[in-house]
Image 1 (cartoon, helix red, strand yellow):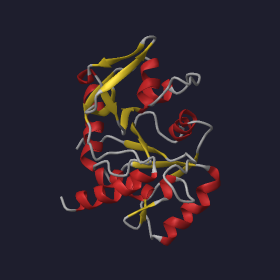
Image 2 (cartoon, one colour):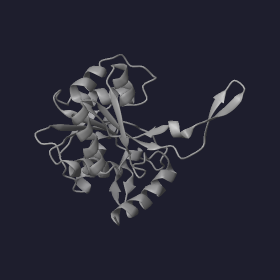
Image 3 (cartoon, helix red, strand yellow):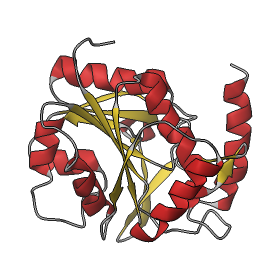
Image 4 (cartoon, helix red, strand yellow):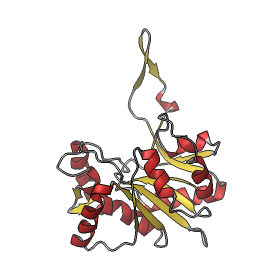
Length: 230
């Protein structure tokens, strides 16, 4: 672990999607009896208990989250920030709470199984190289690209699937997020690259899934059991 370095984490849970099933946005659905978002926050706390944790939530669900924290006796310290119109704007709102001399991780609230070890590796590499760091995994499926004449095979060895956390020197990412919004931004690295921040890839984790659908919730319970036995 890096000594005397300040870490921040912006956990983006500003979505209102119900694709994962149920009557609540996915970040509040239960995994092993506890809201998904609590698992996510706990991973960052276990990685470094001094991390400044900022959680971005839809305004209309902040009171519900506070009630859930009370019901589950969830006491890990974190700050709540209101989400924006898009993920870009939600991240920007969260970054307003991050000091420029920190190293900051941006993480999807719906990735509850990220390991504390991966989080720390991302921070370490960002500090060591003074660049953006993103975890990736190999594409294991056959992939085709649509063309004017139909489709064509793509060499999957040239493809990587991007995960979070994505970690940056905070001053660089804060400056990048002063750029105007562009719908082509798919993640924080794409915003940072537009600002000409160098990006380093490191191996991610296949268990670090992003929960999106009701099937993912079923899978999440099995991943939780698997990780609990390790």
